[in-house]
Image (cartoon, rainbow, N blue to C red):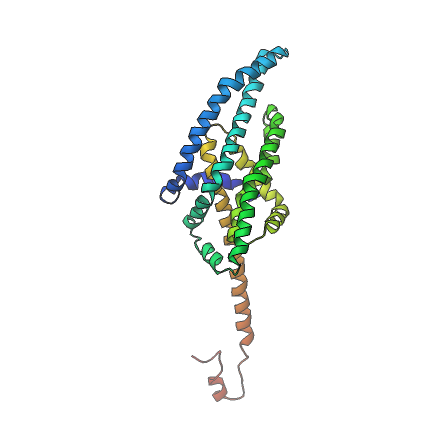
Length: 280
Protein backbone atom coordinates (compact mmCIF):
# COMPACT_ATOMS: atom_id res chain seq x y z
CA UNK A 1 0.00 0.00 0.00
CA UNK A 2 2.95 2.32 -0.56
CA UNK A 3 0.93 3.87 -3.36
CA UNK A 4 -0.98 6.03 -0.85
CA UNK A 5 1.99 8.37 -0.47
CA UNK A 6 2.30 9.28 -4.14
CA UNK A 7 -0.56 11.85 -4.29
CA UNK A 8 1.43 13.91 -1.78
CA UNK A 9 4.75 13.24 -3.50
CA UNK A 10 3.18 14.54 -6.70
CA UNK A 11 2.32 17.85 -5.06
CA UNK A 12 5.92 18.31 -3.93
CA UNK A 13 7.37 17.19 -7.26
CA UNK A 14 5.17 19.57 -9.24
CA UNK A 15 6.09 22.51 -7.01
CA UNK A 16 9.83 21.77 -7.14
CA UNK A 17 10.14 21.26 -10.92
CA UNK A 18 8.98 24.55 -12.44
CA UNK A 19 11.17 24.32 -15.55
CA UNK A 20 9.91 20.89 -16.62
CA UNK A 21 6.28 21.04 -15.48
CA UNK A 22 4.93 24.52 -14.79
CA UNK A 23 4.69 25.65 -18.39
CA UNK A 24 2.79 22.49 -19.29
CA UNK A 25 0.30 22.93 -16.45
CA UNK A 26 -0.10 26.72 -16.39
CA UNK A 27 -2.69 26.99 -19.17
CA UNK A 28 -4.95 24.14 -17.97
CA UNK A 29 -4.69 25.31 -14.35
CA UNK A 30 -5.81 28.82 -15.34
CA UNK A 31 -8.71 27.39 -17.34
CA UNK A 32 -9.79 25.10 -14.53
CA UNK A 33 -9.42 27.93 -12.01
CA UNK A 34 -11.75 30.15 -14.03
CA UNK A 35 -14.31 27.38 -14.38
CA UNK A 36 -14.05 26.37 -10.70
CA UNK A 37 -14.73 29.95 -9.58
CA UNK A 38 -17.67 30.05 -11.97
CA UNK A 39 -19.10 26.72 -10.78
CA UNK A 40 -18.70 27.63 -7.10
CA UNK A 41 -20.33 31.01 -7.71
CA UNK A 42 -23.28 29.40 -9.50
CA UNK A 43 -23.64 26.78 -6.75
CA UNK A 44 -23.60 29.34 -3.94
CA UNK A 45 -25.85 31.79 -5.77
CA UNK A 46 -28.55 29.40 -6.97
CA UNK A 47 -28.22 25.92 -5.49
CA UNK A 48 -27.36 26.63 -1.84
CA UNK A 49 -30.31 28.93 -0.99
CA UNK A 50 -32.85 26.67 -2.68
CA UNK A 51 -31.59 23.61 -0.86
CA UNK A 52 -31.72 25.40 2.50
CA UNK A 53 -35.27 26.59 1.80
CA UNK A 54 -36.38 23.11 0.78
CA UNK A 55 -34.95 21.50 3.91
CA UNK A 56 -36.53 24.17 6.12
CA UNK A 57 -39.88 23.46 4.45
CA UNK A 58 -39.42 19.83 5.46
CA UNK A 59 -39.01 21.02 9.08
CA UNK A 60 -35.31 20.24 9.33
CA UNK A 61 -33.43 22.10 12.11
CA UNK A 62 -31.96 25.37 10.91
CA UNK A 63 -28.32 24.41 11.61
CA UNK A 64 -28.73 21.00 9.99
CA UNK A 65 -30.33 22.51 6.89
CA UNK A 66 -27.34 24.76 6.36
CA UNK A 67 -24.81 22.03 7.13
CA UNK A 68 -26.35 19.50 4.75
CA UNK A 69 -26.85 22.14 2.05
CA UNK A 70 -23.23 23.31 2.23
CA UNK A 71 -21.93 19.73 1.97
CA UNK A 72 -24.28 19.05 -0.95
CA UNK A 73 -23.19 22.25 -2.70
CA UNK A 74 -19.53 21.27 -2.39
CA UNK A 75 -20.25 17.86 -3.89
CA UNK A 76 -22.35 19.39 -6.68
CA UNK A 77 -19.56 21.85 -7.49
CA UNK A 78 -17.08 18.98 -7.57
CA UNK A 79 -19.31 17.11 -10.02
CA UNK A 80 -19.49 20.16 -12.30
CA UNK A 81 -15.71 20.47 -12.16
CA UNK A 82 -15.30 16.78 -12.90
CA UNK A 83 -17.42 17.10 -16.04
CA UNK A 84 -15.29 20.05 -17.15
CA UNK A 85 -12.12 18.13 -16.31
CA UNK A 86 -13.39 15.22 -18.43
CA UNK A 87 -13.24 17.52 -21.44
CA UNK A 88 -10.08 19.46 -20.60
CA UNK A 89 -7.76 16.98 -18.88
CA UNK A 90 -7.26 14.50 -21.77
CA UNK A 91 -5.99 17.35 -23.94
CA UNK A 92 -3.08 18.08 -21.58
CA UNK A 93 -2.82 14.92 -19.47
CA UNK A 94 -0.43 12.93 -21.63
CA UNK A 95 1.97 15.87 -22.04
CA UNK A 96 2.14 16.43 -18.25
CA UNK A 97 2.53 12.71 -17.60
CA UNK A 98 5.35 12.30 -20.14
CA UNK A 99 7.13 15.44 -18.90
CA UNK A 100 7.09 14.02 -15.37
CA UNK A 101 8.69 10.77 -16.49
CA UNK A 102 11.41 12.72 -18.30
CA UNK A 103 11.97 14.95 -15.27
CA UNK A 104 12.29 11.77 -13.23
CA UNK A 105 15.11 10.69 -15.57
CA UNK A 106 13.20 7.91 -17.34
CA UNK A 107 13.32 9.09 -20.92
CA UNK A 108 14.34 5.57 -21.95
CA UNK A 109 10.72 4.50 -21.51
CA UNK A 110 9.92 6.40 -24.70
CA UNK A 111 12.88 4.78 -26.47
CA UNK A 112 11.46 1.38 -25.55
CA UNK A 113 8.10 2.46 -26.94
CA UNK A 114 9.68 3.31 -30.31
CA UNK A 115 11.53 -0.01 -30.38
CA UNK A 116 8.40 -2.03 -29.61
CA UNK A 117 7.28 -3.94 -32.70
CA UNK A 118 3.58 -3.03 -32.74
CA UNK A 119 1.89 -1.95 -35.99
CA UNK A 120 1.01 1.74 -35.96
CA UNK A 121 -2.58 1.01 -36.95
CA UNK A 122 -3.02 -1.35 -34.01
CA UNK A 123 -1.44 1.17 -31.62
CA UNK A 124 -3.66 3.94 -33.00
CA UNK A 125 -6.73 1.81 -32.42
CA UNK A 126 -5.65 1.06 -28.84
CA UNK A 127 -5.04 4.76 -28.19
CA UNK A 128 -8.48 5.58 -29.54
CA UNK A 129 -10.07 2.96 -27.32
CA UNK A 130 -8.18 4.22 -24.27
CA UNK A 131 -9.22 7.82 -25.02
CA UNK A 132 -12.86 6.82 -25.33
CA UNK A 133 -12.55 4.72 -22.19
CA UNK A 134 -11.03 7.56 -20.18
CA UNK A 135 -13.19 10.34 -21.56
CA UNK A 136 -16.55 8.60 -21.43
CA UNK A 137 -16.70 5.28 -19.61
CA UNK A 138 -14.48 5.94 -16.61
CA UNK A 139 -15.54 9.56 -16.20
CA UNK A 140 -19.18 8.47 -16.40
CA UNK A 141 -18.52 5.82 -13.76
CA UNK A 142 -16.77 8.39 -11.55
CA UNK A 143 -19.67 10.82 -11.86
CA UNK A 144 -22.21 8.11 -11.05
CA UNK A 145 -20.16 6.96 -8.08
CA UNK A 146 -19.86 10.54 -6.84
CA UNK A 147 -23.63 10.95 -7.02
CA UNK A 148 -24.32 7.59 -5.37
CA UNK A 149 -21.76 8.18 -2.60
CA UNK A 150 -22.74 11.83 -2.02
CA UNK A 151 -25.02 10.91 0.95
CA UNK A 152 -21.99 9.35 2.65
CA UNK A 153 -20.43 12.81 2.78
CA UNK A 154 -23.07 13.71 5.37
CA UNK A 155 -21.40 11.36 7.85
CA UNK A 156 -18.33 13.22 9.12
CA UNK A 157 -14.96 11.57 8.47
CA UNK A 158 -16.13 7.94 8.24
CA UNK A 159 -18.52 8.64 5.36
CA UNK A 160 -15.91 10.69 3.49
CA UNK A 161 -13.30 7.94 3.88
CA UNK A 162 -15.75 5.33 2.59
CA UNK A 163 -16.78 7.50 -0.37
CA UNK A 164 -13.15 8.14 -1.35
CA UNK A 165 -12.35 4.42 -1.10
CA UNK A 166 -15.24 3.51 -3.39
CA UNK A 167 -14.13 6.09 -5.96
CA UNK A 168 -10.44 5.22 -5.62
CA UNK A 169 -10.09 2.30 -8.02
CA UNK A 170 -11.52 3.97 -11.18
CA UNK A 171 -9.59 7.14 -10.36
CA UNK A 172 -6.28 5.25 -10.24
CA UNK A 173 -6.97 3.17 -13.35
CA UNK A 174 -7.86 6.22 -15.43
CA UNK A 175 -4.51 7.80 -14.45
CA UNK A 176 -2.52 4.74 -15.63
CA UNK A 177 -4.18 4.01 -18.97
CA UNK A 178 -1.85 6.25 -20.98
CA UNK A 179 1.20 4.38 -19.72
CA UNK A 180 -0.32 0.90 -19.96
CA UNK A 181 -1.63 1.23 -23.50
CA UNK A 182 0.43 3.86 -25.29
CA UNK A 183 3.82 3.40 -23.62
CA UNK A 184 3.77 -0.22 -22.50
CA UNK A 185 1.75 -1.62 -25.39
CA UNK A 186 -0.97 -3.30 -23.31
CA UNK A 187 -4.43 -4.02 -24.58
CA UNK A 188 -7.28 -2.42 -22.64
CA UNK A 189 -8.20 -5.86 -21.31
CA UNK A 190 -4.61 -6.41 -20.12
CA UNK A 191 -4.59 -3.04 -18.38
CA UNK A 192 -7.88 -3.88 -16.69
CA UNK A 193 -6.57 -7.28 -15.59
CA UNK A 194 -3.51 -5.67 -14.01
CA UNK A 195 -5.68 -3.08 -12.27
CA UNK A 196 -7.87 -5.83 -10.88
CA UNK A 197 -4.92 -7.92 -9.69
CA UNK A 198 -3.42 -4.92 -7.85
CA UNK A 199 -6.76 -3.56 -6.66
CA UNK A 200 -5.63 -2.53 -3.19
CA UNK A 201 -2.70 -0.49 -4.51
CA UNK A 202 -5.06 1.20 -6.95
CA UNK A 203 -7.60 1.91 -4.22
CA UNK A 204 -4.87 3.27 -1.95
CA UNK A 205 -3.60 5.70 -4.56
CA UNK A 206 -6.99 6.60 -6.01
CA UNK A 207 -8.77 7.25 -2.71
CA UNK A 208 -6.24 9.90 -1.63
CA UNK A 209 -6.09 11.39 -5.13
CA UNK A 210 -9.89 11.56 -5.23
CA UNK A 211 -10.02 13.18 -1.79
CA UNK A 212 -7.67 15.93 -2.97
CA UNK A 213 -9.86 16.58 -6.02
CA UNK A 214 -12.87 17.18 -3.74
CA UNK A 215 -11.27 20.19 -2.05
CA UNK A 216 -12.86 23.36 -3.52
CA UNK A 217 -10.57 25.81 -5.34
CA UNK A 218 -7.46 23.76 -4.53
CA UNK A 219 -8.72 20.87 -6.65
CA UNK A 220 -7.73 23.02 -9.63
CA UNK A 221 -4.14 22.30 -8.66
CA UNK A 222 -4.63 18.77 -7.34
CA UNK A 223 -6.13 17.51 -10.60
CA UNK A 224 -2.76 18.13 -12.26
CA UNK A 225 -0.62 17.11 -9.31
CA UNK A 226 -2.47 13.76 -9.38
CA UNK A 227 -1.27 13.22 -12.95
CA UNK A 228 2.27 13.91 -11.76
CA UNK A 229 1.66 11.53 -8.85
CA UNK A 230 0.56 8.73 -11.18
CA UNK A 231 3.72 9.20 -13.26
CA UNK A 232 5.88 9.04 -10.12
CA UNK A 233 4.06 5.90 -8.98
CA UNK A 234 4.71 4.23 -12.34
CA UNK A 235 8.33 5.47 -12.38
CA UNK A 236 8.88 3.85 -8.99
CA UNK A 237 7.41 0.57 -10.21
CA UNK A 238 9.44 0.73 -13.41
CA UNK A 239 12.71 1.27 -11.58
CA UNK A 240 11.96 -1.60 -9.21
CA UNK A 241 11.07 -3.95 -12.08
CA UNK A 242 14.11 -3.05 -14.19
CA UNK A 243 16.31 -3.20 -11.10
CA UNK A 244 15.15 -6.75 -10.35
CA UNK A 245 15.73 -7.77 -13.97
CA UNK A 246 19.21 -6.22 -13.97
CA UNK A 247 20.02 -7.97 -10.69
CA UNK A 248 18.85 -11.32 -12.05
CA UNK A 249 20.96 -10.88 -15.19
CA UNK A 250 24.03 -9.96 -13.12
CA UNK A 251 23.47 -12.98 -10.85
CA UNK A 252 23.12 -15.27 -13.86
CA UNK A 253 26.34 -13.97 -15.42
CA UNK A 254 28.19 -14.43 -12.13
CA UNK A 255 26.94 -18.00 -11.79
CA UNK A 256 27.99 -18.86 -15.33
CA UNK A 257 31.40 -17.26 -14.76
CA UNK A 258 32.08 -19.29 -11.64
CA UNK A 259 30.87 -22.45 -13.32
CA UNK A 260 33.47 -22.01 -16.04
CA UNK A 261 36.39 -21.88 -13.59
CA UNK A 262 38.24 -25.16 -13.25
CA UNK A 263 40.27 -26.42 -10.36
CA UNK A 264 44.01 -25.92 -10.72
CA UNK A 265 46.06 -28.92 -11.86
CA UNK A 266 48.77 -30.31 -9.57
CA UNK A 267 50.40 -32.54 -12.15
CA UNK A 268 53.30 -30.23 -12.92
CA UNK A 269 54.59 -26.74 -12.33
CA UNK A 270 54.28 -26.08 -16.06
CA UNK A 271 50.54 -26.83 -15.93
CA UNK A 272 50.21 -24.56 -12.91
CA UNK A 273 51.58 -21.67 -14.85
CA UNK A 274 48.73 -22.00 -17.34
CA UNK A 275 46.04 -22.47 -14.73
CA UNK A 276 43.45 -19.63 -15.00
CA UNK A 277 43.39 -18.97 -11.28
CA UNK A 278 47.17 -18.70 -11.01
CA UNK A 279 47.97 -16.84 -14.20
CA UNK A 280 48.57 -13.09 -14.01
